Image (tube, rainbow, N blue to C red):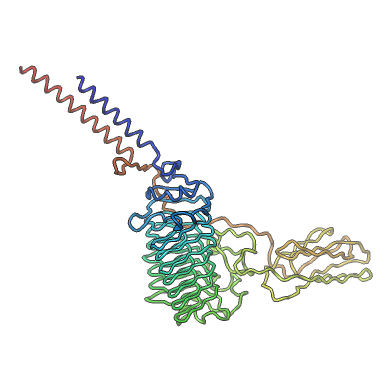
Length: 533
C-alpha cells in the first residue's frame, strides 16, 4: 500500500513538472509570446531579430520599427547573419505588422543571403526594409535569398543596394521556387551577374508574382529584368516596372527571359539597354511563353520590339505618354480598374495598383507638375456683356487632369479648370471676385470683374464632377497561409522532440492509469498468494 501511494505521488509530481515546463515560453532572447501564430514571439530590437535563428520553426512578429544601423559593426564587419540556410531553413511565420527595419547591413561571401537566407513553406508579411545594404554570392535578396514554397505578402524594400557577383539576385527576393509574391515592391538598386531582377532574381515551378512593382537601377550581365530576371514555368500578372535596366544579353524592361511562362496585364516604362536579345518588356522568350495585354513605353533609345522578334500581346506606341496615361486606351481598357488597378492617375501618369493607396496625383509614376496658367481679363461697364477668358500658357509640360469647374452663388466663383467662362451682365454694375486655382496646387490668382449680382456663370467642356482625390481601400487579393493555420496547435519542445502539450498530458494520464491498474493487479495477486499459503 505504501509503495502504491509513493508511486502515485511521483506520478503527480512528474505530471506537474511537465505541464509547468510546457507552460514556459519557448521564444528566444527574452521575447514575449509563445511562438504560435496567435501569440507570436515579439521582436523589439535588432538583437532579437537576429535571434530568430535560435528557433527557425516559430512564429515571430515585429512589435515596432527597428533600427539595425549597428549591424555594420557586427561579426567583424560581416554584419547581420541571414536567418535560415539550405541545411536548416526558416519554416515559421513572420509578421511585420506594417513596421519597418532600417539600415540592415549584410556583407557575406556565402550563398543564401538576405534578412532570411533560406525559407521553406514560410509566410512573411507586411514588413518594410528601409535602406538595406546586402552583399552575397548567389541567391541574394533584400528580404530573402531563396523562398522555397510559402507566401510573401505586402513586403517591400525601399532604397539601398543589393549586390552580388553571382546569380539569382533580386531587390526583394533572390530566387523564388513554387511560391507567391503578392502586393510587394522594391525601389533600391540591384547589381549581379546572371538572373538579376529589380524585385525577384528568378522564379520557377509555378511561382507567381502579382500586384507588384519595382523601380531603381538594375544591372547585370545576362538575363536581367526590371521586375524579374528569369521566369520558368511561372507567371507575372498585374505588375509594372519603371526600373532602368542594363545588361548584355536577354535584357527586358519587365522580365529578362521567359521559359514556358506568362506575363499579363503588366507594363514597363524604364530605359532598357543591352547587346543581344533585348526587348522593351521581355528580353527573350522560349518554349511557348506568352505575353498578353501588356505594353512598354517605346521612347527613343528603347528596343523596337516588345520581346525578341515579336510584339504579339503587346501594344507598341512610339513615345506617346498621353496614350499610356489614359486608362481607356488598349490594353488598359481590359484591365481590372474595379479591384486591382487604380484610375487616380488617369491622364496624369502611368496606372498604379489600388493597394498602393495613392491619394495625390503627385505620386503617380511619370507625373510632372502641370504648366503655369496665365489669366487674361477684359472688363466693361458700358456694354451688356463682360467676358473673362482663362488660357493655358503651354510650356511643354505633361498633360494634366481636366479639373472641375464649380458654379457657386454670385459672391464667390471657385474655378479649378482652365476653360472660357462667359458672364452676362445688365448695365448696372457691381464688383465680384473670380478665383482661378491651378491644379493640383492651391496657388491662385484673383481678378476683380465688374458685373451685377445677378450674373450667370457658365463653363464649357467640364469632363469630371469632382477634383477631390480619395485613397482607395487596400485589396489583399490572396488568402494567407498564416490565416489558415490552427492557432490552437501549440508546439513545445520536450526531450528534444516537439509534441503538442495536450498529447504529452494525455500520454502521462494514460501512463498513470496503466501504472495504477498494474499496482492493483499486483495487489490482488499478492492477496491470492497469501490465501493459498
